[in-house]
Amino acid sequence: SAVISQKPSRDICQRGTSLTIQCQVDSQVTMMFWYRQQPGQSLTLIATANQGSEATYESGFVIDKFPISRPNLTFSTLTVSNMSPEDSSIYLCSVGTGGIGTEAFFGQGTRLTVV
Amino acid sequence: GESVGLHLPTLSVQEGDNSIINCAYSNSASDYFIWYKQESGKGPQFIIDIRSNMDKRQGQRVTVLLNKTVKHLSLQIAATQPGDSAVYFCAENNYGQNFVFGPGTRLSVLP
Image (cartoon, rainbow over all chains, first blue to last red; front, side):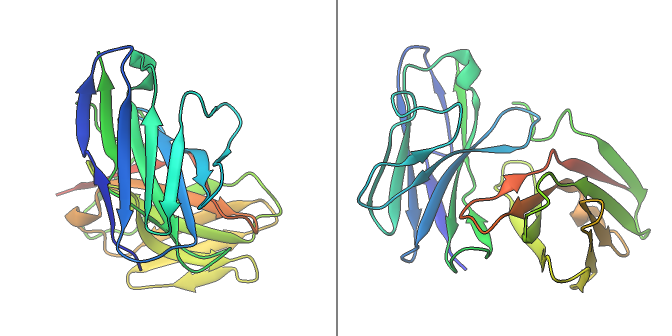
């Protein structure tokens, strides 16, 4: 298993600003992912955070809007840039420890409200 | 603030009864499935998993059934308790590194 800490747990931000969310894992993990969960909806994958290289983004998500860093095997950040009220969501960090086709663990999420 | 799953389908059951939550998955090539439980203000928590070479798997008070013919998963919770109240998601994985989540079902346990 893995213990995942996300910061901040929640924030209220002004439109046009940016917020960086941090994800810290208590052990080295091979895979790290960022998901978005809009109000009342399911989870949607934003991107896979790759250590030492650019993140892999899913359709509908772009690096300019959601830049991601992953400097090592235990840490990643997701930035939500130039925010608008439509970006109000829960953002979740997820990690995989056992390779392809094994359990994914989630942080508690960051609840973002853009006003 | 708005709770997770506010607009999701809701299943209401009496405490002590059995619950069955259903999920239709999208990819016939998916080979690994997980049921997650998400309580308000928390991230999804692993409940039980199943691989595509199985059709049933049992845990403590929970059973997952997989029907690949119709691409259907179900989660059965025995003797449902108030602590089981949450939103439940199925997630599928296709030899990849990430999971695709179903729409979710809110389980409400009535006293």
